[in-house]
Structures are given as structure tokens and as C-alpha cells.
Image (cartoon, rainbow, N blue to C red; front, side, top):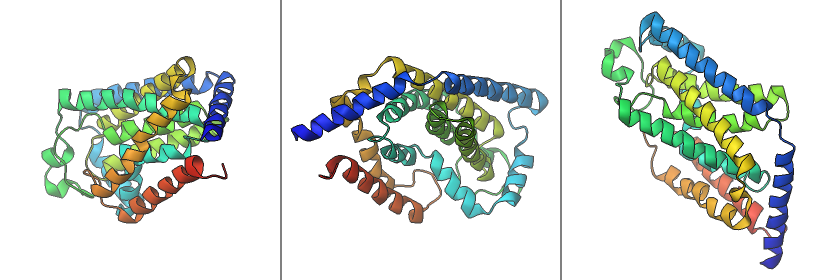
Length: 272
């Protein structure tokens, strides 16, 4: 037990050393991208109001990829799935894990706060059934902003902020963008919701990453182990409910067992 604690302390020390080599390029990129998303939302609103662009984009995305693909992509905006995926980085890149936790808290405050404050109606509550194709559960309220988009840009935004190259940064942001587009493809969000989610997610990711560089409480072994309760708690919850998402047991069950195995290998295996 003492030896395991010493190894974990060394891992945290290496994480702090990696943080010292981080540049501000990734954070600056997120902030500029967030500003671009905000301006795009303003221009879209001026052009046609809150619902502008939905019908065209919904039809285009529906023709671009099959329903099953969009239903799968959208699950990577499920905050429980993303919490579980942080176990990929928890031991190997604890500085990323800590930044993701901070960013997730900020993103959740932004998304859930605005959802209850604005409580905008979703497309199925506004448009006639023949005007859209809903994939998965039919949702009616709490449209603004898109929580899935916010969560995706939090997760992939932190990866972009800490990326080693511009290509990795672009790939991470494109992955988050694809999740955001899936919400329009599924017929459960307006483009404005997605842009607002992208804005909030990138802002939260940039702020969370910046905070992690200056407040390193999460790189203390005891705090780190306590924070692991978050992704570990998400694993059984994922198996209990789809939480308004399209059902994807073929994805969720292997993911849960893979992340549980990752935790065992990283923290409980004697060979570590």
C-alpha cells in the first residue's frame, strides 16, 4: 500500500512538471473559437431569429449520415459517457483529468443554469411532426443551450487546450462540433442551442484548463483518488438509464466494462 502511494505521488509530480511546459496557445484558441461561435449565433439570430437555419441543416444532416450514426455520435455528448471516458486519462495524464473536472463543473453550471432560466421549447414542441424527423426520445423543453454540445466542447476542449500540435487541436474541436451537429440531426435542438453550447463549453474548457495550471489541488494523491468517484459513479448510472438519449446498449455496455477494466489496470493491478 505504501509503495502504491509512493508511485501515485510520483505520477502527480510528473503531471506538475508537464504542466510547467504547457503553452497558452490552446487556451487562446478556445477563447477565440468561443468568440467566433458567439458571433455566428448573433448573425444567425439577426438573419432569421431563434429558429433560423434548423430546417435546412436538419434535412442536410439527415441526408448526410444514417440515423444510427447520428444516434451514436450524440452519446458522446452524454456527460455520463464523457465522465467515464476521463478514466482513460486519470492515471496516465492526471493533469488532464483535473482540468476536465474543473471544466465540467463550470460547464454544468452554465448549461443547467441557462436551461432552467430560459426554458425554451425544442423543435418537436414547435414544428409539426411532418416538418422534422426525431431520432430517439421526443423532447419538448429546456432547449437552450444544448447540454450535449456543452459537455462535448468541455471534454474535447480540454484535449484541444493541452494538445501537442495544431492537428490534434483541430481534430478535438471537430469531434465536439460533430456532437453538436448530431443534436440538430436528431431533431431535438435548434442551431442556436448548439452554438450557445459550443460557446459555453469552450469557455468552460479554457477556464478550467487555466485554473488547473494555477490551482493544483487535484494533483494531490488524496484529492485525485477522491475525484475518481465521479467517473466510477457514472459507470453504473450509465447502465440504469438512457437519460433521454437514443438507446445504444451495444456502445454503453462495452464502454462501461472497458473503463472499469482501465481503472483496475491503472490503480489496482500489482504490476503497476
